[in-house]
Image (cartoon, rainbow over all chains, first blue to last red; front, side, top):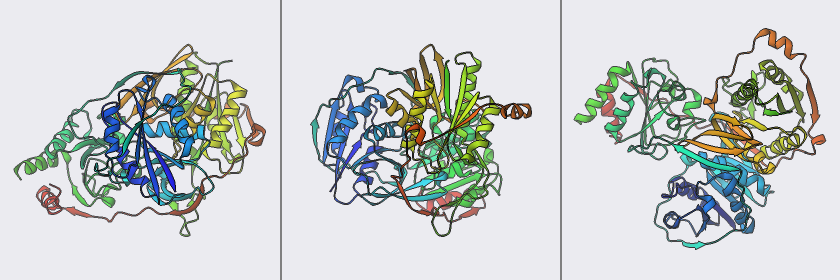
Length: 316
Length: 249
C-alpha cells in the first residue's frame, strides 16, 4: 500500500485549489492512503476544507506561530519530521509554493524528486514534461522507499468537496531556523477570477504595445467573466504584472476557453496552455505560430477586433 | 576574500526546438547549438553587478558535466567572472547530486552567496538550488526578481503566484533567479581574448566526494500530444457563432 502525504497550499484563510488537484493525482496511485498536512497558524478553517476533499483519508493540522508565512526553510523540517514516519510519497503542487518547498523536503529526506507530474502510471512510474513540453518523459523510481513529487496542477481535475476525513491536531519535533524572514507580499488584489483556476482566460501579448492598451484585455475578460493572463513579452515590457505570466516559467493553466490576443505563440508560451480545451487566437500576422495550435483563429487588427468582439458578446 | 559562486549549466539553446527520437530513447540533441542556461546567465549577470558595486571581490562560475561545458565556462569568464571550476563527470547528474557537489564547493570556497538559475530549460526540474540550501542548512530565496545585499543580509524580492514576495535572508544563502532580475550583458571581443587567460580548474566529482547515482530512471521519451490545427474564421460574427456552438459563451 502507498501512503501519500500532501502538503496543503493556503494563504492562512483559504485552501488553494491546487491541494485538491494534488489529491486527484495521489488517488491515481493504486491502493493509496492520502493524508493532507496543513501547516500554519490559526488554520482550523483551512484544515476543515482539506477534510472535505474526496479521496483524503486524514488531515493533519500542525499549528506553529513560526509557520505563519509558510517559509520553506521553516516548513520543510516539520514536513520531513512527519514524512519520515510512514509515507512512501510526499506531494505538493507545482505552483511557486510547491516548487520552492518540495525540493527542500526531498533533500532533507535524501529522496529524489519528480517535478511536474502530469500522469501516474503506477506507484513508482510517472510522466512529466521536459524541454518546455517538447517531450514527455516517463520515469521510474522503483528502488526508492520514499519519493517527493510536484503535481502539474493543469493535468488534474479538482477533486470534489464531498469527503469527510478526520482532522487531527498534531505537533512535530523539529528545529526551526530563524535565518529566513518574511518582509512583505504585494500583489494586485483583484475581483477577477484567479488565473490558475479560472474556466475562461483572456491573455494579452506584445502586440498590445502599452500598459494603457492592455485595458482592452481586461475589458474583454470582464465581459466574459474571465481571468487575465499575459505573455512573457507583455510582462517583460511592463504591460502586465509578473503574476499574470502564462508559460514555461510562468503559470501552467487549463481553462475551458483561452483567448490569446496579440500573442505570437512561442513554444514557451504554448506549453503553459496546451491543456486548454479551446484556444482562440487573435493576431494580425496570419503566419504567427499560435495559429498552428489554436482551435479558432481570427486574423486582423486587435484594436478593432477586440472592441467589436466585446460589443457582440454584450449583445448576445 | 568575499566571493559569489554561480552555477552554469550547458543546455540546448533556448531557440532550438528539440524533438524526441522516433524510438523513444531520448531527445535528439546531436549537433544542436549549446548555450549557457538562460537563467544561469541572469544569475551570473547579477553576481557581476554585485561585484561591481564593491560588495564582493570575486565571482566564480561552476559547471558540472563533461569537458564539453568548457566553452560555456569561457563565455562566462568573458562576461566577467574571475575564474571557473569544471566539476567533471560523464554521468548524468541528478539535482540532489548536483546540490551535493555545490555543497562540497561551498565548503572549499566559503562563498557569501551561491546564485543559480531557478531552473534549467532542458530538464525543467527547478530543484537544485532548494536542495543545496537544505543540505547546506542555509536560507533559500528562489525566483528572485530583485536582490539587495546589505552586510550579512540579503533582501530578495521573489516572483510568486500571488505577486511579489520580499524576504530577508542571512548570508550565506542560496539565491535562484527569475527572468526579470536583469538583462545579461553582451560579451565583447576583447573580453573573449582576456577570458582565455583566466583560470579554469577541473576537479572530478569523486574528488569532491560525490559519485553521481541514477535514482530516477528514464523509461521512455514521447512526443507530446499535438493539438489539431483549427480553423481561421472570417470575422467576429463567425467567431462569436463558433464560441456559442461550443457552448463557451
